[in-house]
Length: 207
Image (tube, rainbow, N blue to C red):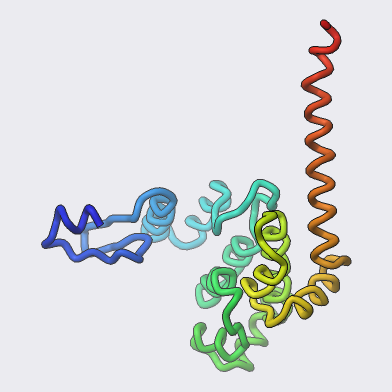
């Protein structure tokens, strides 16, 4: 790292988004500056204000233009208590990991039974239902990238096999991943054709 070489007496944490060391603050740059800014807002004005600002900035987790402006993860954080505040973020960043109730409860410092009860009471969804929906939502985004194979997508969002992924995807979406990908491609081609027609119409009119 250039910074570490130029300032050898400064301890650098290369994997941290941002650092707060007494009166000194630093961030990795780019989008991490937003994370640092939201953290400072939370320190000065409280968690709810920081979350409201995040909503206005349309941030939280990297998203494509097709996604809704307010992601499910951000909605979850806005509604949640401090104890649950970062659980949804952790889930969405670790979809390929073991997301059992026991693991999640441990992260929230709660018993599995109490965690499940409070999770469902607060959000109307059992942890397993939330995770299943999150996995399929992420898979739909990854299916729009042609180079991603269905097998690799299945593994990346936590399914042990492509077949298990396909069955779960069909239950949630109503069609198999391969069919969904074909529909997305057909829709993209149709939109491109419409755009080309709009561009060509004025040119042909004056030909």
